[in-house]
Image (cartoon, rainbow, N blue to C red; front, side, top):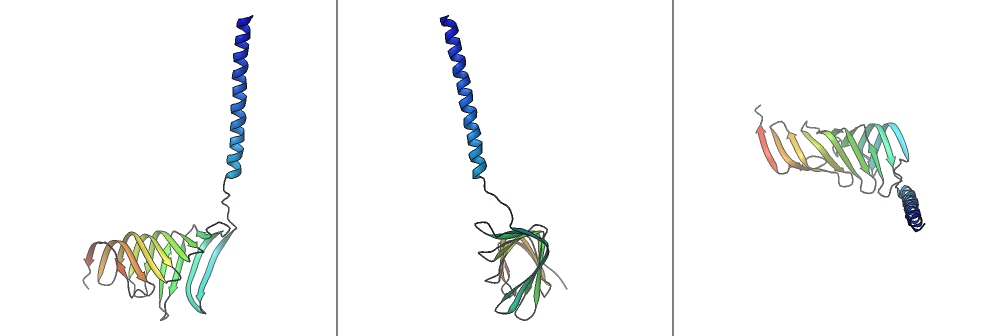
Length: 184
């Protein structure tokens, strides 16, 4: 009889432990589900044509097939997953064009993060090729620390970074890794 009592007691303890563990894991899963951040867009728009002005002067035009609005996040942004075409308008009515496979515009900083096959063409047909480029709309400045290829009428320069004002009067390839002179 004592032997049966010991086995029954052990069996009940095992069942009790299993019940406690399974109820804790259910409770833990409920807490995990409640604490998950909801990362849903405020809106999704198609065929975007946005014009950015400052003091009544047109500064840029952004075209994209799709925009996802995450302005409800703690650090609000707009995502352009299907790429963009960005035209930067200079002071002398000259323009530069940038295309990329994807872009993100951050509301709080006014920085546009362009990614994937980024090609920038200036009004003088100088061309920058890179995988990522940032455009600071407030400072009208373009920069990257990614690998770049910068082609002008006279040469091609390769490097790890690029820095320029919007008018390209102060454009420079950083950490130059090579250059090729183009004979005319």
